[in-house]
Image (cartoon, one colour):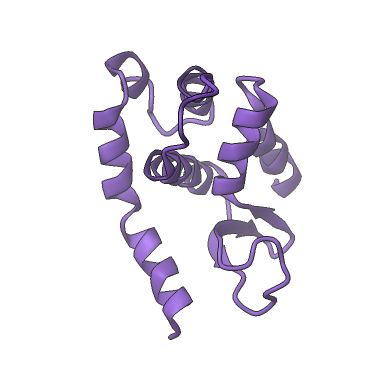
Length: 139
C-alpha cells in the first residue's frame, strides 16, 4: 500500500472522530440538527454560508475537512451501493488523491469539492440537491 492509499484509509478511519469534533465546534442550534439525513446538510450548508461570508475570514481547512467528512458520511448512509473511492492512477485527474465515493462505478461524489462549491454558489441547498439527484439516478 502506498502513502496516498494509507492517508486515504486513515481519512476514512477518522471520519467519526472528525464528525464528533465538528459537532463540538458548531453552535448547538446547528449541531443538534445533524442527524445523518440528507436534509441535515442544508442546515450545515447554511451555517457554512454565514461562517464563510466575511471576505476577511481565512478558510479553515480543518473545519472544511470536518464538514466534508460529515457530508461523506451522510452520502454513504443514504445512497445505496456507495463505496469509498480514491483516484491514484491518473495524476492529471482533477480528483487525483481526493477522497470520494462512487456508486456502481459510474456516479462519483467528492465531498471536499462540494464544500467549496457550496460556499461559492451560496444557495443553501446545493449539496443536498446534488445528493438527491445522485440518489435518484442510482436507484
